[in-house]
Image (cartoon, rainbow, N blue to C red; front, side):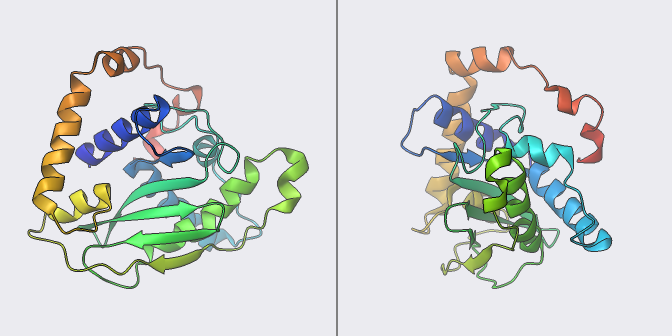
Length: 218
């Protein structure tokens, strides 16, 4: 999990620094995925009309979280897509591409399954977060109905039981897991020796929203 979070941090910083082509995108952490799962359980228990979004979910929607590499970019205003690693079934990783524009979720899974209950939380909570972080005058224009979920057809790419995390990070299509693993390792090594990233990490300050509630989402 730490390696995946580290890679997502590098992706966020590279996007913020405009070092690569993707733009208007946000990269989430495993902590975010875990919180979605937990909060979806609350939504189901309390009922959709009674449930109130957790403040930390709103902070994700405003770009305050994840705290490392925070962007302050608001979903649907500054960001069109989310990329999210998700731990499913207790032993497997998948990746989600969530589009606010098309109200859809593409699921990338190297094992080729067609259904994960963990995705339901994203389909139902993401539209609620998007609506809540919009300017008040525009919130009435946003629906909270569930996003459409599609499972992207891919071949069985795993060469070992550890490959699913690599695939989830890279959204591979060519099946070259070994090369992908090497690329990710190189990205992390390069980031650890990048003066600009070292400077940004040294200036990290925990946002106020994490002062007393971080233990609830780990």
